[in-house]
Image (cartoon, rainbow, N blue to C red):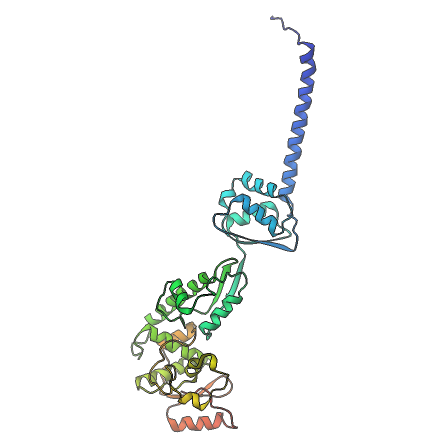
Length: 351
């Protein structure tokens, strides 16, 4: 049996020391790992009730960690960055707008950014609004970058990719969700494409007997129907009156087009002089459709314009309750005006 030489005294003393150091290192590692696991499982302390951060494309994980600290997350930016890096998901974080509340843990924060679980805001664009009203609403929208604020209408349409197209009526009224930090131009582009799609679909369903010659004419008529309809059930018949007048080459004689032509000069009171003063939008002095739409029509008005209700009516007058009284001839129409517009009231929109 081989003889084992005893260890020198110095090495006999070193072995317990190394063993003790190892135990200390192991304890330190276990302690650090435990602290990290606890940190990952606990909600991040916030300066307020919530914190928001918009991450631009190309932002580094270190910058993202620092961004959250600047947004009100009360933790170490180094620790947050190291968690992103150590997880292996740092490069999978998606650009976007994110919001967290006081219950969000570091694990949940990273998972939210990797999923692209953005915080979305919405802007609602109403049927019958003009393009001017549309732009004003976008300017007020929360978290939407106003990149088109300094552009005229023609410049804006060129930026959208539709140079030379008049903007009125070309944007579909709807509720649009967007990531905070998105641009107003991006919303405009979506609304423009939506209207192109809706208009093409409606034109494909047009009545073969329609007097309209193009989808653009359908859009213009739909905008007038939108402004003239107080009751949804009357929409098809209102469109039918205008279709009949177009077939007969009768002036449309619709007040909303005159009002649109007055622009910001209109003070809310339509006067006889306005109806007699010729403008491109005065359908009392000019036959046919005006040169552009006068508002943003919704889906129902688009479909009514291309598939109007069959009717012999050539006139209608507001009853005062949102509905309209339709007449086939001028004598009946005058009686309806006398019935529903007595008492010194100004005439309602009457084609």
